[in-house]
Image (cartoon, rainbow, N blue to C red; front, top):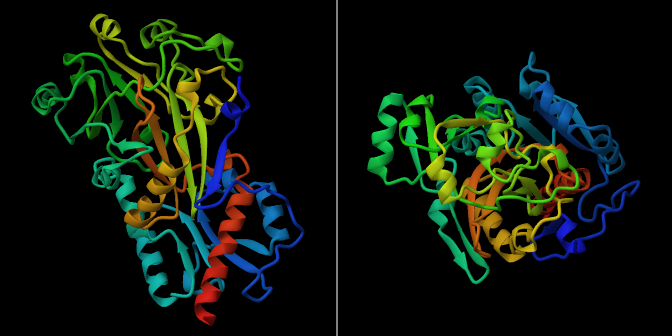
Length: 375
């Protein structure tokens, strides 16, 4: 397999990929050589996955100190912080952060609570992408047709017929709160089985984005040429068929990795299969597709200029700097892409070399703020 098919892609807008070298102390041009204090408010699970020893060690070498925020004390009494990094839910926490932003405008809060909220609801999550209707010489980016069902499962078949959505359909929970349940998917093959689904949910048209079989060097025992055959094995592994691109965004930096997804559904399979089948989180870290022997037309990463334009516009429209996109290429095309999910502050610990990208990003925020004050 060609080497470029195996590599992950990382770049910043307008720059070529740079060699990541660990330095004892970053040279900070433009602001005093002081320690950067980052207060963090994360769940214990998120703290463990994100604040790994390698990240903390590299951060110390670059003059960055991570400090846990004490939830039993007023936020304004803690610090002083240069940056507040957070991923907690709840109306009370959002209000605490909003009040803190007003009284401490000198502190960068990643990211504003009000900007994060639309990503917690799949009805609004993809609206920014849909409004963009991005299309240029490098490709077209859209979202799958979808329908929101808030209650009454018995009404789903008629609602789907009236909307004109075509089977099969992917069913996702309406609320995206980062829990395991919020990432569980179902694939519905026939109209009448839709009544088995549990609202509130979003139904998306399934877009074929891979192939019916493949050769995987890492998971040879998980091969299944179709969803229906996979289901006959009585296990639900996502390491089959389709390819999903996880596009991580950290400020202006973008990194793309491949993940296995659900296989394509043929017309014959659709006509012969009935029911609703549930799957775990499809794009898990264990389902990496970077070492698989894939057809280059399927494994080829989305064009760099297209991703740069998409990321730049989404940062502006969403008002966020830490998020990722789940993106697929429609099977049989080279330049037709769909964004199927957006997540705030995703699992960066699963992103190769995230330590260098994230620490550089934090330093760039402080540098930019200092230059603005002194300029």
